[in-house]
Length: 364
Image (cartoon, rainbow, N blue to C red; front, side, top):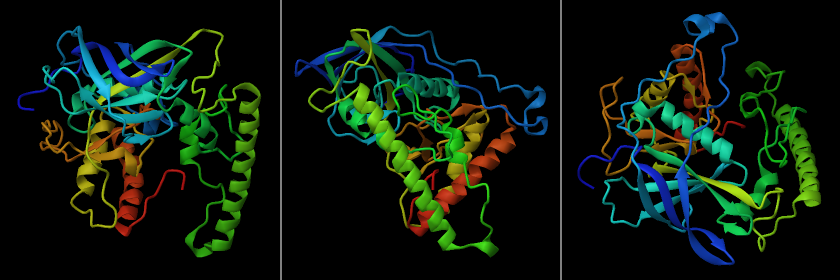
């Protein structure tokens, strides 16, 4: 569309079709904008790594106008764009002829009992308001609704069935949440490497394969224990997508409304012109004390093709890429230079791998 987009706080409610069914009949659902939830801060282990006084960077004053009170009417398109630990992403169709002035939108729907994770992700979008549409996607709000337990929510049954297949921490410190599917310290899981790291002079594929075999056996054991626990307490089925898991007659559904971005970084092609832009984006986030943690190929997407990008206030040009998925992120008191260095290390590994034709994941 032509002209500037509306402010991200324009809407106080959302009516969405195609997301839930009651008695096998699709019904529209009204959700209200809800307060986001800050995550636990990540503090430096030593004073030399921290900002002066060990303080977290202060959120800049908001440049948004007073919050609006409009309701956005949308319908969910059936083609799922992506899914992950917290939920699934779908494109949205704006039902009111886009009279407000909006980019193409997507909705991230939290899986059952993942509302806190999505609320934390929403908080990071708010924290980095100044670089929405610059380095990260524009965010139009975190919305929640109470729904009846007999409501059929898109993808919830599939997420329940797949829950025990999530990545397992194999250090003997696995701490599942009450639903048996969560690890408390995902950062440690992603950052972990063997205590006896192999140096190149002693490198042995035999040792590597032996370690991987031991990890796989332990993962299988933990996953089976999870299945046994779930079978005793939950027993979800696809025919009964919302099993009664709480004493309450209701449960919460939460969503995050974001602008739609482009494709992932291409694989097997030179990326020399792309690498500086992606590094600058992570530098932008580091200025807010945000450590992304979940640095992955799938979390770096192209800016929209019909983008009204904002010139980066720090690098004085328009970035061609955006970062998404902040449910694992931390607000940190580390020095900006330290955050940059840590991010650049992961980015180098990931981007070099993509050039060579393969994807490196944090748990590899």
